[in-house]
Image (cartoon, rainbow, N blue to C red; front, top):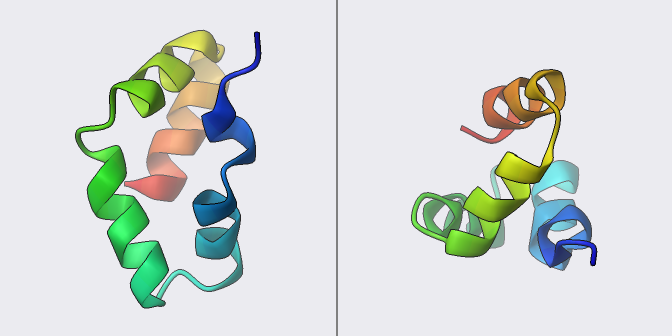
Length: 56
């Protein structure tokens, strides 16, 4: 089963405009979201590092 975080609409909005209000809410959300943590664990080490670098 694919994690919904990979195709999250808020994540794609962040990618388009990282300075928007929605993007800031999404960044706040991923700090505590158990789904995001599970998604990161499902990635390879290199992919995980890239995601953390991009979204932290």
